[in-house]
Image (cartoon, rainbow, N blue to C red; front, side, top):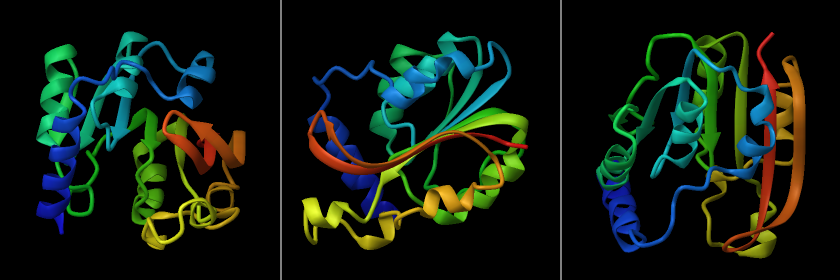
Length: 188
């Protein structure tokens, strides 16, 4: 599976090489006032790095992980100071250090959730946004349900953290409707 995933994502990033990519996720931009101006950030499944670059521009050292060498190469050309790791997150352990910020946009691997707590400093920020099972109503049978959050799942997992923002619902994205859960939380 990892090899097929890498090939699929490499092909996708090759096909979209002419699409502008310097736009970080709205959730990150909207809550950027919470970000520290120094320290370390971790971007899970960074893609072409817009979110990682956004953190770096604010003064953080950033580790960015992705399965696609095509995406990471593009990121490296635009922002060579990022610490890029080519890895399949289902097989690669998260870096053994404490981070001030962890980003997880549109990648769901529930086994990472407990690791976020162990890798994030006390008082550190966690940003998560990903698809929910309501996507089945929008696009039936197009996404494996294991990659879709259940209603309230994200909130319940992090309910003992300081929840700074939580929203769950259907929104209009750049590629059409999508059902998402969004969370900004501070580790106690």
